[in-house]
Image 1 (tube, helix red, strand yellow):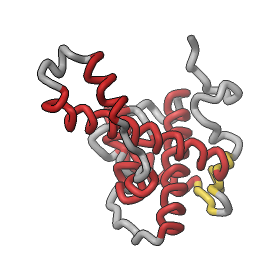
Image 2: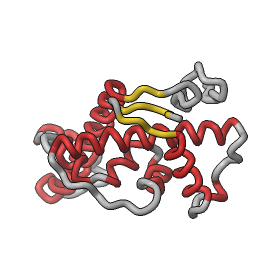
Image 3: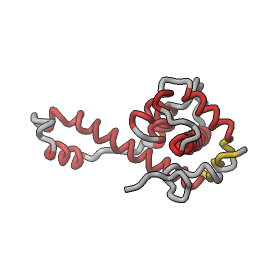
Length: 180
């Protein structure tokens, strides 16, 4: 059975179940919902998102001619659970793709000065003393935003989810519980 397609590449239900089993055997097992609950079914949907995004990034790695990465266990789910996103998981798993996709992101001098001026409590010294630290913070944030937007666009273009594996936040799926 197929949970999703990334281009023509399938994400199998077996792969989703294997990832769920690995998580249930791992350090986050106690935090995971029961598989038959609505939250458990949404976890499965989230794992499809992780596997599909991972496939998108692996396709980009092949396009860029980057070597395969040996992995053991689930993709970088620890970082994703801590930071809250699929993009964090795949960026951690393939820092080479992250670096290639974000290589052109730059922080302008005006942005550094503006941030420094608005955050004098964090950077009380002269701009010359804080410039590198401020540029590093802004650069990382800019790269993260750029990578997230790139991944969202690539997923929108390439990923087709099969019925029952809709995004957990899709209000059309029966276990949708994200209400404001």
